[in-house]
Amino acid sequence: MSLVIIMLKRLSLFLVAPLVFLLGGMAIFSRVATPEPLAVEAFDALYADPAEVPSGPLNVLHLGHSLVGHDMPQMLAQLAQSGHSYNSQLGWGTPLKDHWDENAPRNGFADSNTHPQYRDGLNALSSGEYDAVILTEAVEIRDSIKYQDSAEMLHNLADKARSHNPNVAVYFYETWHHLNDPEGWLERLDRDLGLYWEGEILRRALNYEATPQPIYMIPGGQVMARFARAVEARGGVGPINNRQDLFLDQIHFNDYGAYLIALTHYAVLYKTSPVGLPHALLKADGTPAADPGPEAARLMQETVWEVVTGYPKTGVPQN
Image 1 (cartoon, rainbow, N blue to C red):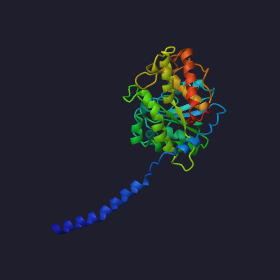
Image 2: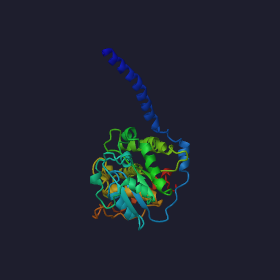
Image 3: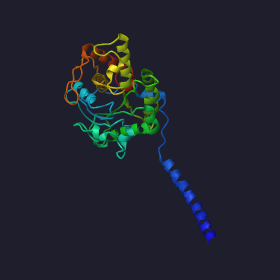
Image 4: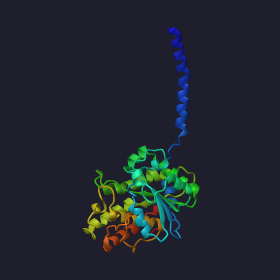
């Protein structure tokens, strides 16, 4: 009897092992491999001509996390033409993958989306109602790339937006890391744009398509770095003395930082200089935001325009 049992076990292993191998192989090959980064020459060629300048106010969708926040989009709406409207879906450190996968455990969604402008992200993308969709990845950016399929998710979300509205403009918002990053805050901003935001995410996302369409950059980190250097070189401007004065803590912007990033979004979305825009604005809750004053606001506005008109991936006409 024991010999029969042994023979049956061996037979089952003989039959099951190839099946397991076959199914495992099918699972492996069913995944779409992440493509190599789009070649630099082809990448640059995509942005050789600026994007079309909007003819009127925009309807915008923000998918992101606390480095988007509630106040920054509200400030942007006040800077833009009358009629600018927006919705958002936010979370705590939310990667693109969590906006794509509605079954993911989305940290902070219950707390971050109790505001009038909230709209479910996938529902919003499927509506085809937006002129511009702004996406951003979670930081630490290297961890998102390693664990969260950043390039694939950027492609998926952009493709979904375009499949429901071929005329939608898609943007990728570059942020920043902690001020006390051991590798250096400015050093990482100088390095990470090309290495990670472009090289590992954007250029790979574009290479999913045989004929890629531009995804434009909103260079928030680059503007932060340029403005911080300018302020610190002057020994302070208005109420802002150094980079820390743009932040509540080591990574989240305060009212001054929110204003600077709202100016950046305005300049890229509307392809228009922000110089001369108002600087006494309201926060999302209707209370006055801290006013940087005319001198600091002017430097912010000029810095934003210098950065976006010196970086073709914004789609803004270049100097």
